Figure 1 (cartoon, rainbow, N blue to C red):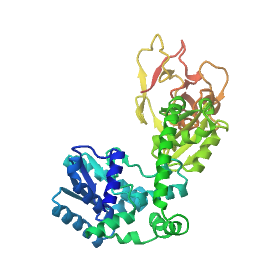
Figure 2: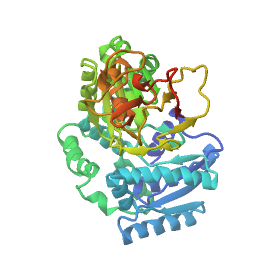
Figure 3: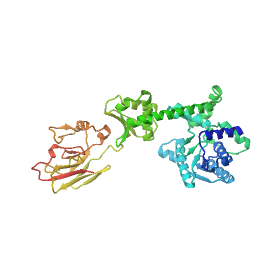
Figure 4: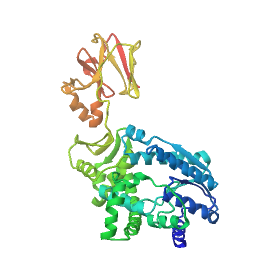
Amino acid sequence: MKRIEQKVLKFIDEKDLVEKNDKILVALSGGPDSVFLLHFLLKFRKRYAIEVGAVHINHMIRGKSANEDEEFCRKLSVNLNIEFLSVQKDVKSFAKLHKFSIEEAGRVIRYKEFDKALKHIGFKKIATAHNCSDNAETVLLNLIKGTGIKGISGIPPKRGNIIRPILSLKKEEILEYLNNYGISFRIDESNLQTDYERNFLRKEIIPLIKKKLNPDFENAVFHSSEIFSGLSVLLNSQIRGKLKETVKITDEGLKINVSDFDKVDDKLKNYLIKRAVEEHFKTRLTFRDIKNIKSLFEKKSGKSISLADNLTVARERQFVIVSYTDKNVPFKPLSLVEGDAVKINDKTLFILPVVETPKKFSGDKLREYISADKISGNFCLRRWKVGDKFSPLGLKGTKKISDFLNEQKISSSKKKEQLILTNKGQIVWVLGLRLDERFKITNYTKKVIELCLK
């Protein structure tokens, strides 16, 4: 058994997972892996001069069995004389509300509750019991789903304040150790089912790989994932510089400069797109998503595609823009009169009577003065529609709103949202952009109205 202990100690030291005087909270499920981790850290706490506690998350999925797991963890912690916290969370309801799988919902809740637990009792790190077999499942699952080099880099030994001290051990080694010392643990019966993705790999696929191809499959994957992890770090350092040169975050969304993107090495373009979008929007792109985004760089302005998580990617002249799809495109026309003020997103439109006309105009496109002599009845505030025309101030003749917005280099996403103020069917103001020539102030103007957007 010393062989197993030495293997873990060596891994902890190599990865610098535990420091002197650390206060470590073990994520204790009651299963063999977390029970082993708890006993191991307690056995060697003097070696590292650490304090150890435990936290249990009851997912409320398995009814009586889940409650028995929680009670097992409580009693174990009392017997070991360590601090213990337990939390009950309705994972099924959370998954349904957020449209997550049960596994994903459980993962999100666990790490959220771990952070709360650390703050509550003043501990420094969370230790999870991910092992070498878990890592093999993760790499294989990510490889099947096509998540790229980051996915096949496997489970990291350390991420922020989360450490995984037994990542180098196979499941068989953990069970061998526990059985040798007569240490009891709980069995989650859901792990015996094959309806979950991981369980299917664990019970059906990996045993066949070990039997037919490589009996030491987990270790082979573990060593490969460490190599891929190193390559991922190197690749990320290259991408980081390219991101600064190529990508900008604006009110419109994430903007990738087309000409700068063209200068990026073809081998890095896919990674650049993946890293930029996934980091900014916290979403996961498939290979098909990346391929479709990449194709927009070769297409004309105005072309767009839709992604999951309510995202839209559009080609706009010199940029490809990734943004959240506007769910509020429909805009109910509003009837307004002089003296009204109406909220529009983060601004307010004011229609104000003017007592004294300014002698000089600032040129501020968000503040305009119009002749009210030709105004009759109410104003109408609405979105522009195909076929709308107006007479832009300073120009002769009329122009389609669509052409005018194109000339102003308004992006397709913003173009859809553009509002106009009309009176008796005539466009008075393309908000924030241009007045209509017919409503400009002249020497003969008798009444003036101020239009202000602020």
